Amino acid sequence: MAVSDGVLRKVILSYTYVAIWIFLSFTVIVYNKYILDRKMYNWPYPISLTMIHMGFCSSLAYLLVRVFKLVEPVSMSRDLYFKSVVPIGALYSLSLWFSNSAYIYLSVSFIQMLKALMPVAVYSIGVLFKKEGFKNETMANMVSISLGVAVAAYGEAKFDTWGVTLQLMAVAFEATRLVLIQILLNSKGISLNPITSLYYIAPCCLVFLSVPWLIVEYPSLRDNSSFHLDFAIFGTNSLCAFALNLAVFLLVGKTSALTMNVAGVVKDWLLIAFSWSVIKDTVTPINLIGYGLAFLGVAYYNHSKLQALKASETQKKAQQSDEEAGRLLEQRDGEGTGRKNDNQN
Image (cartoon, rainbow, N blue to C red):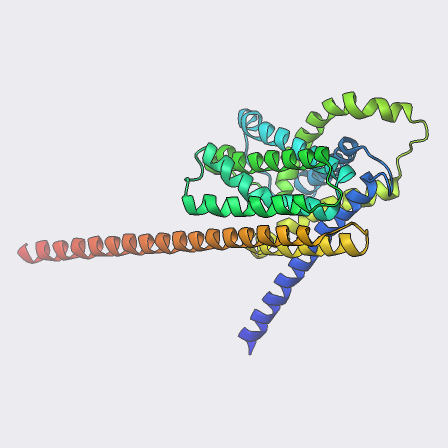
């Protein structure tokens, strides 16, 4: 009974983490759309919004790491920081800038459909950087996802070329960032959780974003005498963004990255339903057919990755068992030789 209670408690806890992550991710996306959309809060300054997020998150991350010491910092030299973290920070700032900008031009539902291209971008860039091997089966899977997104785009009632370009650029920069994390950090034995990522990368993003901000948005904000920073809106929005990173930390730490991927699919469908029913965005049948095709492709891709991971773990366990058996055999042979020498003496 104690075992079943423990299992039940673990399952309930896992579903609780998933629900919290879905809620916060959902909230941040809809909140950002509300702030940036010209028909809603009407504050179309995506760089400024991203900088507010980065400033808030880097401050809280500093408190958690350095003041309260709730999270251990990573041992990192200045040379490693500039060669590894800074390029990743630059890509992250571009990804956030362009993805937030897309909310001004596109519906929430259509943006989620375009984000289904992420596995395609990650795989393609991984092959380009020789981190992934080219496989015909995987490429066919990537083509099926791309075709599904293309059908969804064809059926989009309010298609905006500039908005689509921004979102595709955001996907490309984010995919490059994920591949570079493997090349520049993971290959050197450095692993950053969401809190240490914010601690090291958010200040970087703030610096990089300040350059386009001064050129693109600062003149407009300076000339707009009616502008005042609403601390209630931007404070709660930034708090949600930071809480989302904490939720990712809990979700991946207590469950797995695959659970997060599956939860992400659920979140995308919920956002599409919310966008259609509450925000009153137009979602056409062709939209849904296209996204359904892309969804099946992404689901198959996640399944393939899981099977490959299981096979790799099984191979590692078999190798460890062989090594252990070899050590025991050597030990037994050594003991046998020792006894034989004792008998001769």
